[in-house]
Image (cartoon, rainbow, N blue to C red; front, side, top):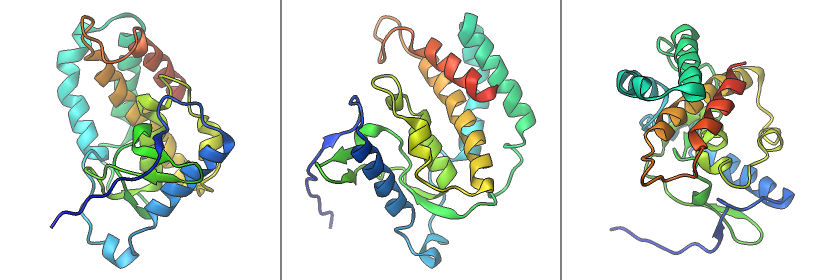
Length: 211
């Protein structure tokens, strides 16, 4: 039996977030990450679109996409691929950070503000993950910056990450930023899904993360 209910609230995507909303967003995802007891979480499958799956996708995209792009997008893509080759992420096993339940989608449209708290929808790609990867999903998703930008520094400061998590967060942000550069490079100029120049803006974002 499938039971559905309607959650109250307005999507956070496309709106500037107040301090209250930013704190509520952090509280909601923090609650979600620890919602599954550790013994149960250990048996949960790894969520789709995790590190190794994304790297494999990048490797399959690169021969098709790289010859089609030029300028700042092509340069950033080359730098991203060079970083990936030396990062060791392809050979890495399970990260040495606490595991968490991950919703698997960083789109701010899936986070609903009801006036006092943030509710979360869309668990299609949920599963075993870790906080750095899930936070990178949010900060690097196009919804966090193509409109009114998410205050990423203030948002991440609300989580009290340990040194290992902070180090992994940067690597995950770089990986997801590279994924988004490829995704945005697929945009059809005749029927774009995002505003003109979005791929170029993403190239700048990736370059800053790699610096």
